[in-house]
Image 1 (cartoon, rainbow, N blue to C red):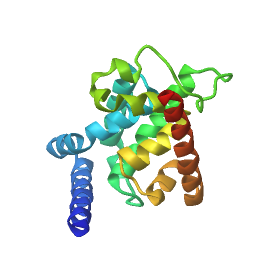
Image 2 (cartoon, rainbow, N blue to C red; image 1 turned 30 degrees about the horizontal axis):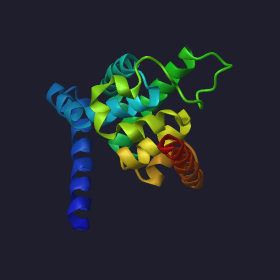
Image 3 (cartoon, helix red, strand yellow; image 1 turned 90 degrees about the vertical axis):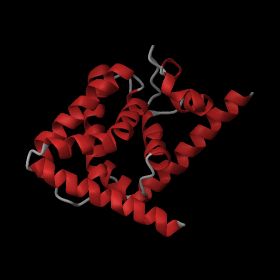
Image 4 (tube, rainbow, N blue to C red; image 1 turned 60 degrees about the horizontal axis):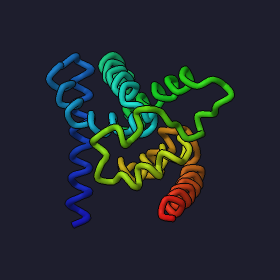
Length: 187
C-alpha cells in the first residue's frame, strides 16, 4: 500500500516538473494543468496563513503570475510544489508586513471579519480550525505545511530557509500550542 502512495506522489512530482518545463516555453495548456493540480492547496495555504479570503485570493493570483513569469528560474533544488509554496509564502508575508505595523508581530494570532467561520469551505473541521486561529501565524504555518500539505521536514526546511531541527522544534511547539487551545475550547 505504501508503495502505491509513494508511486502516486512521485508521479505527481514528475508531472509537475514536466508541466513547469512546458510553462517555461510559455505553453498555456501546461500552465492551466499546473494551476488545476496545485491551485487548491496553494489557496488554502494562503487562506490559513492570511486568514482573509480577499487577501488570499489576491495573493493567489500573484503566485500564478509569478510562476508564469519566473518558471525559467526554477532550479530543481526542491519539488515544483515546494517552490510554488515558497513564492506564495513570500508574497503572503509581504502582505502581512504591509497590513500590520511594527508594534503588532506577524507571529500573533490574526482576527478579522473573514475568519474561518465566515468561509464555508471549512465547516467540517470547524472546531480545529477555530483553535488554529488562536495560535501564532508561525505555528499555524508549520502545522499547515506538515498536516494539510504533507510536506516533509526537509522540504519545509528548504521552504522556510531554516535548519531541519528548527522545523522539528517548531512542529513540537505548534502542536503544544494547538493542544492548549483545543483544551481551552473543550472547557
